[in-house]
Length: 345
Length: 197
Image 1 (cartoon, rainbow over the protein chains, first blue to last red):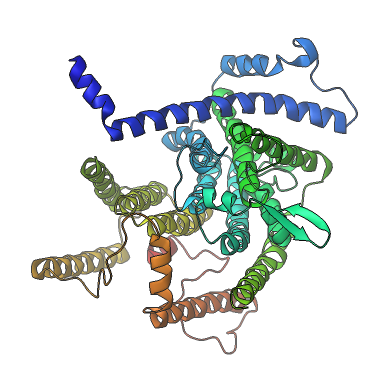
Image 2 (image 1 turned 60 degrees about the horizontal axis):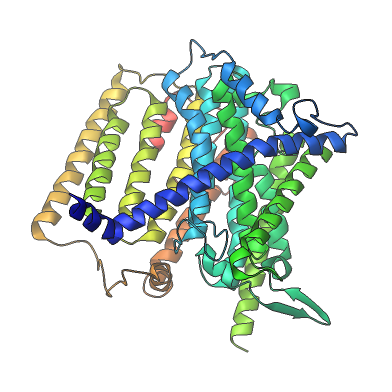
């Protein structure tokens, strides 16, 4: 019996599956922890931007607020609309969380930690961000509520429009790195870029600034965060696609939104900000840089949300199709020409 | 391990494909088609065709099916209409085309041939698959590739012209005759998404 178990344990496939599962559990637990405290962080940031203290009653500096919130959500009454499609109504919150978590499997957190290095990692990200639309669209439709349906429709149109520019803006990075693997993309950003007298890290944000700006704008739209939160639009759609959701199902959408924000920030860090590369720290601690950059990006998300007004719907579409898409296409053309010119010099 | 995974995904693929045509609710059909695309992508991944597999998800599941769903929800199509001559015609045509396709497949399988060179070069099984696809696409298959792009462009311009022409009240001058599905804002009954599929 023991011998058989030892033999099984020695099997490389079993080893691979086991360690991958361990890594997945670590990612899941860390993500849940981060999400819980991001809600606190967001309320604190929002509070200070609006010149008020934010949550400060539960525990020291309000640090136990997320726990209280989770308990409150668990206790709440679950409501299921009578006329809606019940199967899809239950499915939609799950679909909100899964794509965000799946993408994290290909993000290189540190030189020694990533769940798996896929040679098409960038495409995994694009595929999963494409599947993220379904959660909101289906939630809106299955609730059998006009406001929900409008929210779902808006989200489908918005995400389709911005996905194009999102994908096109990554092509510049792809051309420079010459690989779809996110690990290779991070490796391509090591070292120093000498710009005249100014030594800069060789991050793609400096060689692809236009792509970076487009990517970040599209990231706001893809995560449905203000100023692109038209699918929710409290003031006009009474909550939008999640009007009919309550209790833990609503919490799943909330979780999905925050996980999407973390994931897309992590991808931004990987593609444009050099991933885990940074000075001073030894190899084993370089993941700290990853988290520093990640939280800087997340802070940017919050900052933008609480300082910019929401766009009007036609402005949103015009921005996506008439500004971002042509600029992203031109950027691809210019980068291609530059790569060709440098390669043939 | 890989044969087991293949069988599992193949089973999901077959069952979900059957449910696409057998389910009564259009939204459920569309969702099962998404599931079918995803399991097909998984089979591609098992064959080490990572690029094709993920592009399958990006394009079909992530973009095209979202638009299908959008149209189905926008027109608020309920259950399939079960009477009338159109449904009979549609069904007959479907059986005919399906039988033809099945016969074609059986014939090719019996002869043991596939249309065109399946693997002209030994495809490296580990990495560099994306480069291989790119190289072949832009060298050997450049002409079909460009031709496909032009056909898609024509269809796109046609759709825009049809949509514009309807709003301006009158046939738009110079509109070609590509049989693009009516993408206009006015719904013309529950026929539209079925025709597009």
